Length: 238
Image (cartoon, rainbow, N blue to C red; front, top):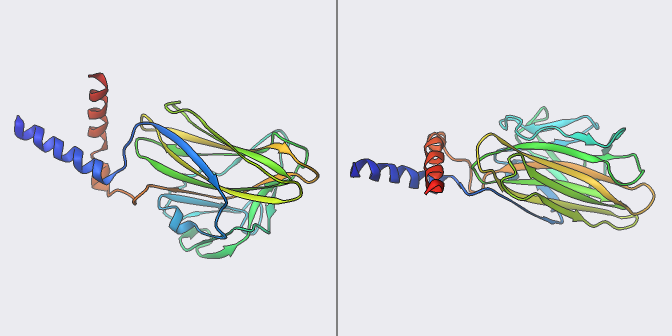
């Protein structure tokens, strides 16, 4: 019996050291994005870019399994146009349908120009693994708010304003750290205009990148996760 317990403890320690498993969490921050973003580097799980050559263009990590959903629009009658002059540029070498891109200024923006309430929404999977989602956005003559929620409400929702300026482009990269309390959950991200600062107000979205800090665990490590989940639940009952 002691041998079995020792072996089980060794397996649990191996999983803990290889995969960042934590209690439910949803925290974030926003900062100016770098002048050049390498999505291949930023998204070891998945990445997505919108608006390469047309407003409807969607490029993804070829091995990312489309974990980051395409966006839907928020607000009745919201229309989307391609952005052609993003100050922050985007590159990748593992994309689909376009395999390699260097420093594209493309993105998408809401062009209704009629005040707050319009925006973008997309989802990513959430489970026991701690993950990082970076969302690259912008605004012109407007302020926007990024909101993120877990489907199981196991951590408080995140909400943060990116303060804009009149007749100026302001860009930001939101970094979300998250994990759910159980597998099979979803993180929903909304990026909406929340303050109209003048004529031609709009918000933009360029890309998102999903990663596991420290790299992706090996499949053999992931196979131990169900047992670790049981152990976690037993600990909670004590």
